[in-house]
Every structure is written in C-alpha cells, then in structure tokens.
Length: 368
Image (cartoon, rainbow, N blue to C red; front, side, top):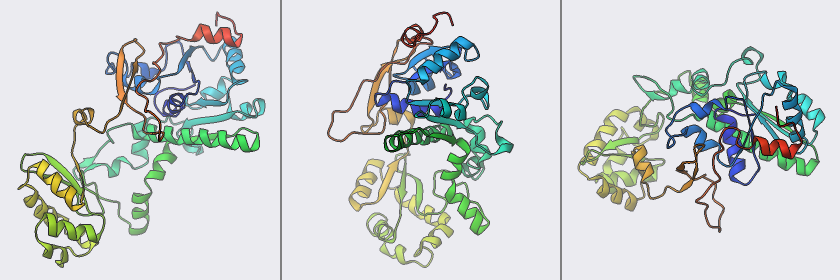
C-alpha cells in the first residue's frame, strides 16, 4: 500500500532484485502517476520507481477488498505502507494487528515520525527537509534552498529497504517476523548530525556556502579559462602541499602563516579562493584536469543534467513506462561483481493491469 516516493524506493529495489511486488492502488491510482509527463509521456517519478511491479486496484475500505488483501498477506513475506497517518489502521491493516495475525510477516511503515505531537503530519519531502533544518544549510549565503532531488523520500526509502532486508535476515535466524517504522524526519536528522553537532557544541550553525564546503578549504568551484567550472577538494596537508607546489607553482603558499593550517585556510577562505581562481583561469579545463589528475588532486567538473546524460561513466537501463513507451533510466547503483550488468528492466504497470490476474490467483471476487 504505497504511494509517492519513499516506500516505492524501497520496493523498487526489491523488484529490481527479482522480488514479486504487488502495488495496491486506489481507484484513481498512485498520485505519483500524475506528478508530471516528463518520462517520455509518463510520470518521471512513477516510471523510475515502479518498474517490475504488479498493479492491483482495490478500495481498501470495502470488505471484499480487505478479504482479498488478507489472502495475499497470508502468503506474503513483506507488507509495506506509507499511506496518510492512520489510513491503513482505519482500513484494518494496523501493524500490531498484522503481527498477531501473520507472525512471520515483515512490516515496514514510512511516515513523519512517532512523536505524538507530529503523528498526524503528512510526510512530504520538502516539508520534512524544512522542518528538520536541512534547507537552512542548503543554498547560498543569500538564502536557504531545496536539495535538487527528493532527498528525504529517497533516503527514507533506502533506509526502508535496509530495514526490510534486516527483517528478512532476522526471520531466517529466529523464525518470526519484525516490524519497522522508518521516519522521514529521523532519516534527515541522522544525516544532519555534522551540522547538528556544530550547532550543539559551538553555538553556531554551518554557513550556507553554495558550491563550497562550509568547514574545509580549499573545497569548491573555480572557473577556468574557457568559462567552465571545476571543483577541487583538499582533504589533508599532503594534498595541500602538492596543490601549491605542482598546480599553483608556488610551494611557499603551503607554509604561509595565513594558510598553513586547515582552520586558517577556512578563516582566510576569501583570499585563498581568489588566489586559486586567478591561477585556474590560466588553464583550459581539459588541461587543468590533466594536471590535477597527474598531481593526485581530487576534482570534478560542474556538470549539467545533460552532461550526466552523456557521461561516459553513466550506466543505463531501459523498459516501458505505464503508456507502453520506452524509457531510459540510470541503472541501480548496486553492482554484482563478476556478472554481466543488466541493461533491461521489467516494465512499469498500467493502472490495474494485474487486478484480474491477482484476484483469480488469490481466490477473490472479480467484482470488488
């Protein structure tokens, strides 16, 4: 019983690995089907996260639909839901009751959090990012911003996938099922631990630095002679010395009293960045890349989405969207060593595409 992004991330990973995933949808379908039409005529969100699933359309408030779903649960390994707060419980699918009825079932719930004061809040990505302080450390000195993808949903879904796999492993060892609640708020609070500790122990939050690191320097973007941007990252004193001697051409900078310690480089970031910028503008970007690579300095070019699309490292998979039209997507990150990589995934289901088949299989009434 999933919708939007968070829970579908978790179940997409399961489907990609060969699990049978039955997606229970309302009569109007998962609202992510209508988010946009940017996935070659279908929803880009829905096309990404629902490949390889079966679509079952039911009204979970109707008794016959409930009977069908319970018939499925009798044979299921995992139950996932991220409906509005309380919706699944009101329909008779409370996690505690399911534990009693199906003691070997792995149960995963995605939502806002368990705190009573926030239990009724809807867990929408940007709202959680704002509430958890992520937006306050994202953006530029001029103002906060949104991370460019649905980071709260995606990371919560990844945590959900990990929880499901943990539950399945523990069931193998103990013979019983487990329930997990993955909170979007908890997920982002966890990855906010560095700025949280800084605030707690220094009394100051990290600054919004745009394309720069708030607590390491030099670590940011610099323009080249051909008006392209390259980012460098100096993580230790050895790299700092090599940058000064072999790229900037002046080893004395490394021992300058303004820059000879990491905290001093951060304190004097403005002057240091200007010094590096003046040097990098002498290079065409490809020449600078070669020099940095030869020197062992970490770098990356500031790319566009089009640049990603044409990137030589990008692996892709193809399948058909809910309209039966071919789409190409970035491949899942997990790589199984020593095997051929998949280039083809199962298709995205049409709304209710598998309803009749599932009803016939699980012995329900065809008129739900």
